[in-house]
Image 1 (cartoon, rainbow, N blue to C red):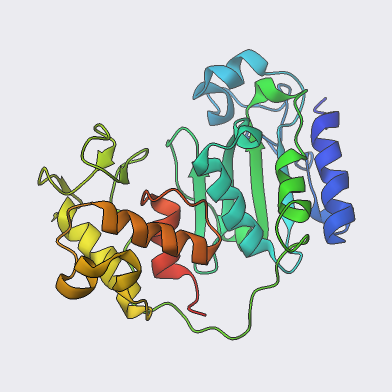
Image 2 (cartoon, helix red, strand yellow):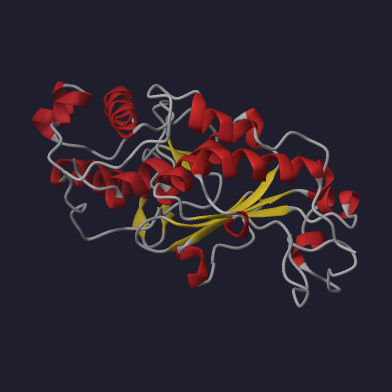
Length: 277
């Protein structure tokens, strides 16, 4: 029968100690009627289930071990989930075994999928975050990334969102580029969208999308001079350059994101969705 592997039980115990959540709010195995998905082992995985068919890592590692953990709302679940997804997108070493995260970002349920196969989740994820690991990682460390959140950050503990905030100004735009793409320098290859080559994504030129993001910072009350004099005096031409990089870096630092100067989905969403403090 499906069992909870020790590596995920260690993560469960760690989160229980750090968050105070009851065990019932840190679920590894689905109930007896659960069929398919990462909460089930091989005895309860249905034929053709996505948790096995879409990845060689899952096919190779399939056993009777469950490979998922649900984390209930402990007061900072939204901040924790956003941070975790940011780490996954940045490709930190302690997240490479994570297949997907289904979470509530404060406005809607989202799914981050390392394979880019699916992007939805049901409303139950407004009150818990689902984390799946590739099945071949059964014996690998799981608590490591959680330790970084609770122990290795500057404040030494999970942050408490400020109450002195206002909603981000609208309208909001979803990240317009395909999975794996980002706004960056023109010499960065096909995935680096610079605005110089007049590429079209979701009905707009790439340069227009970059202008929209920079304008959103202005709506949030940001001084474009943080990116340099040219942006402040002339505005964005939508062609990624050193001043755009500096502006993106400044915003990433302000929002507690990985500072790299590239505009990917996490930094994009932060401008349109994170509260203005």
